[in-house]
Length: 81
Image 1 (tube, rainbow, N blue to C red):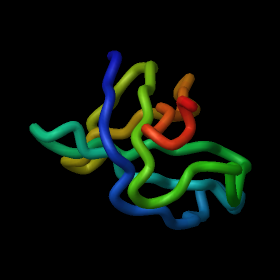
Image 2: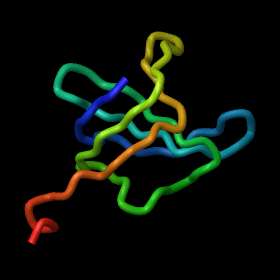
Image 3: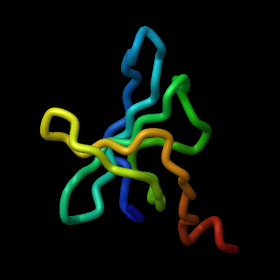
Image 4: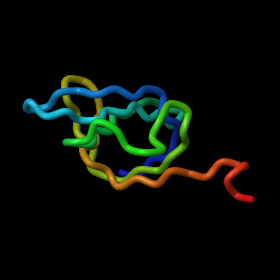
């Protein structure tokens, strides 16, 4: 699955007793949770940031989740100069 969108929520969840960063990504048609296992933060990943992600989505209790996706933060207009 390849998606591009805006991060709308960032939080830390415990998965198997390990802190994991969970970000909600909205592509305009819906939302998917991105889980970065063993990470409590990732520089540059914050609410309002646009990014592209690639990974395998799975339905977990009615929520689409992508674990440890490959991601790329998209440059804003200010960063392209």
